[in-house]
Image (cartoon, rainbow, N blue to C red; front, top):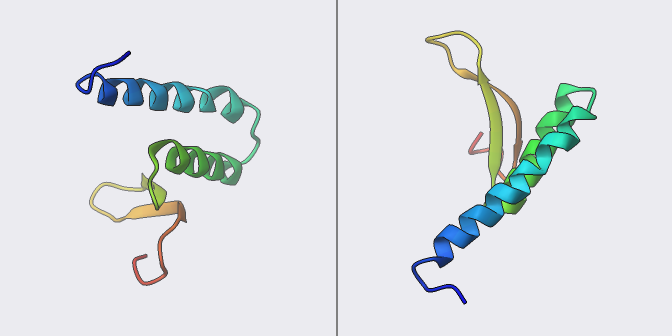
Amino acid sequence: MTSAIDAPAVELVEQLRQLAQLGPRLGGMHTLDEVVRAVLEQGVSVTGACAGGVAVLVDQGRPFEVLGTTGYTPRVL
């Protein structure tokens, strides 16, 4: 039985275990869109988030290029 103090650590370990399962799945994907979708689906699911996004820094000093999002309204984006 875990104590109340240990509960957050146990939850974090479980989240990390689930996210680690994503690695082998990514190896079989052939497009960037597949990878972005998988990262968003797994990341949002594992963390219990209501939204998420994947973006890359294109060039220093410029805005990020958003590769994919989920759960955001068009107004937020």
